[in-house]
Image (cartoon, rainbow, N blue to C red; front, side, top):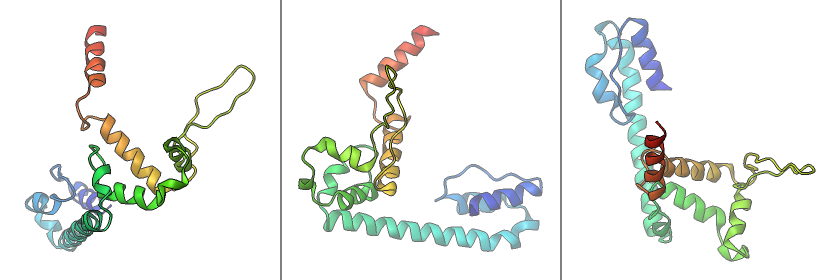
Length: 169
């Protein structure tokens, strides 16, 4: 929101800030700020830099906890797109895996199964039930989007999809 505020202020003066990640925003856009807005945006850029620093510290702490306190998180992080935060959230939410009779029971526990509404001969595919831990479910869905998106690993399925698109064109 702070980055968008900075962009909006510069845009209202007819300027435009270059594209940048949140981590590099302050260093990348500082030279592009119009002199008339320099005094107004300096505190905003300092706040963004401070927040980025706090995020880096929290990320390091999360990684430290994952490595030293919960070594099983390393196994989950072998999956491309699963980081220490998601691994820790999963481990701490599931707690004792022995309370689940089968591994397939974890999906419904987290609300990651389709809702069902059968009526006569119709059984439409519905969205997920969204029961269970909302935070962990959001993290897992984001990991799935990463894996299935353009940043995920190259797979046979992706290559087949690409070939299918080329033939159909």
